[in-house]
Image 1 (cartoon, rainbow, N blue to C red):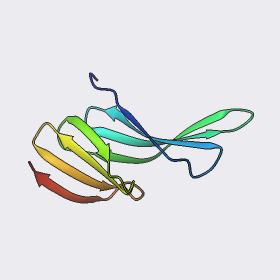
Image 2: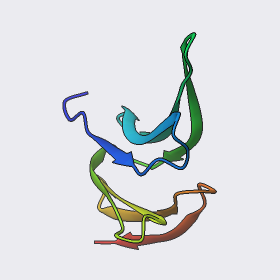
Image 3: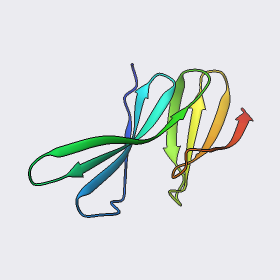
Length: 91
């Protein structure tokens, strides 16, 4: 992958870090790092998949929606918490 990008979300708990990260050319994962004294556990909480390679993505200021632009000319709008596609717009 040529474009590695990560967006960190505000922590909901002191011992967790949540981040949106490009995991495949057409997929973004919501990754949760659970920081424990004895070890760190990495879990994929949600995945957001597009038809076509992802060229860029950003988080809405409300932090409720993920905007994803793909090479096939579609803008995807995902709900961050449940992973549902709320809209697909040809741009």
